[in-house]
Length: 271
Image 1 (cartoon, rainbow, N blue to C red):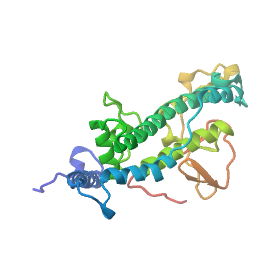
Image 2: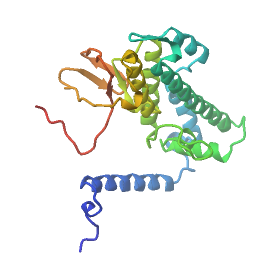
Image 3: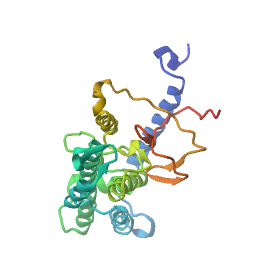
């Protein structure tokens, strides 16, 4: 008998073996990183704390985008309309969704900026080095995302999960780009669905707008069904997270274009 059961025994796809192996490898590497000594001085005689301080001051803090000023956000939302709806501002479902996403993003951005500033102050001795700050410094020295950026004190998830700090900060920038561009200009050509905190809320807002646009026909929200149509990437846009480049496509008559969905173990079957 084999030492490891086949995933098919449990009704899983054979790719489950690949996912399990990847997760085991990540867990092992994280454990190895946690057990490495960090008290000794690094290259050039710098301590881990001094290294983290320089990284924050010279790189990380500069990567953080500007804060959203909520009064300005609300003023801009009041001017935003929809071509098929008579309402304006936050009375339009997707405008309200944008406002909620910006609120939640600004909360995360404020948390990250505050913790980075406090880490520098603690390293300089201007404030007390708490256990939480020490854990943040150790995580950033190992180029991992501090737990304070991911979870609130109750342990609830408050942001997107990514084990690599540089990738997490890149996602922070891309999420800000999508929200800021949408707010400043207009609705994007295609929405980076996985860049939202509440993608299900986005889909619900789209259904609400479609229902309201057919108000004269007495459409009911519960009766509207979602349908996904895969666009041919050779004739449409080229999407890189929140930044859209390449040939633009026409706005669909109903619904919207989205991108950013991932499917492991699959390939594109070109017709």
